[in-house]
Amino acid sequence: MELEAHIANSITTIFEEHSKLNNQIQIEQIAEIVPILKNANRIFFLGMGRSGFMMNAVAMRFMHLGFKAYVVGETTTPAIAEGDLLIAGSGSGTTGTVIKAVDTAKEVGAQVIGVTTTSDSPLASKADFTIIIPAAAKQKQDEHVSKQYAGSLFEQALLLTFDALIQTLWDLDGSTSAELNTRHSNLE
Image (cartoon, rainbow, N blue to C red; front, side, top):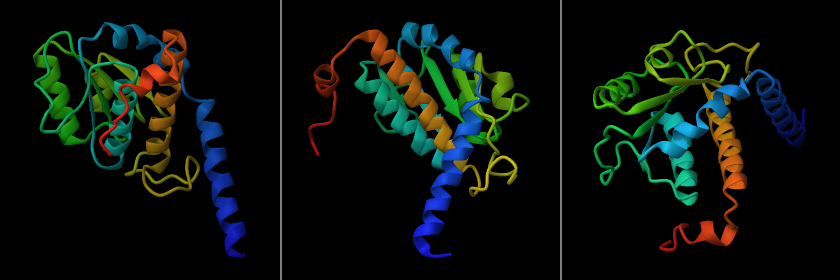
């Protein structure tokens, strides 16, 4: 198979996996968190590894919309407190650092939204609200769910799901691109 055809086939495979996954995501779980987001004093975002990179992108988008958004682990991130919200993403729902942060958030009275692949994970059981993205976690390589390596489908879907939510919040807010641009980085 020539290289271009192989790349085209890979792109098709990934888009087909997302199309299938899209039909399995329970949109009501996502809609349920909208009032929680709007009522939170501040929103903290956490994920480890590649899920963490996706959560960083999500945090940036929320900041652009005008939310007080922080990435857990950054040196300027304040302490979480009552009235705040932690959004934690972990494909397996078992990542130790994520679970410890969830416990801390709950101890101080913050709410927690967990985003994971399975409803029987520690993250799902501890979170106040859970969004299930039924992609294979990195520990469960399952070609029936995804031919991609490790948790790639989950990580991609995590970003796409939140981008859809952010697009919805922006549409409902009515802000213009120019208004959002005032919060876009201008120091690069």
